[in-house]
Amino acid sequence: EHYSFDRAVICDRESTVDILIANNFHFENNCAVLSIDGYPQGPFETVRAMLKRNPRLQVFALHDATPAGCAMAAKLASDPQWFKDHVAVIDVGLRPNLSRPFRGLFLRSHTPVAAAVGISQKDAQWLSQFALELAVIRPEQILRRLFKAINRANKPDKDDDERDTDIDLDLDIDVETSADSGSVASSGNVQNVVVDPESFAADADDSDGGADSFG
Image: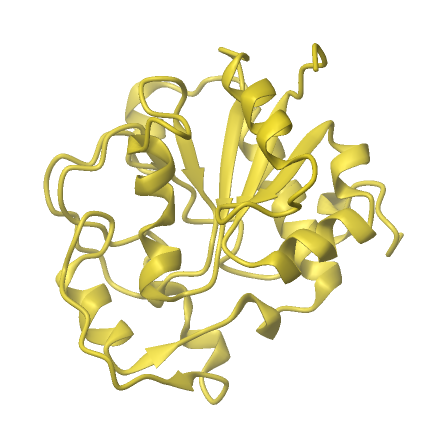
């Protein structure tokens, strides 16, 4: 209970947790891996309490392109049971503007989605018609892209002007960007959410792999 993780990956699916743990991602990266709905059940509350005691924790939100997934980083950053007023949350999941390479693999959706915190009007229009699961990405690439995101978050600080082209730290106003830009569209008052527009936008190469079960 006194152990300190350097980082945490919070997933929207239990199956995503299982992929990461089965391939020792947690061990290789000193990383807690949990789902937002309480999985794995046994150690969940103990591990979450440990995470909240670490003021230097890095949190990564890994999710499908679904309404709940796209809103997950904002929920983690604003929910007192998670990381409200504690640390920033880095969104590295799939979002509508990253969906183009997977055209033909979209799931149909017929549930209207309204713009909300973390979901822009453009996102809402796409999510009202489609969903995209992280399962469209090969497990090897999920591991490599997540490893890339962690390394990217740990790069030395850039100049402010350069940093602003990569991520949006405090999205108090609507940010609308094209699907080609690689940036993430968000809306509403999103505090302490960092958007990584790069790591899950394309395949990672061998240098982004880390030491996982896929070599």
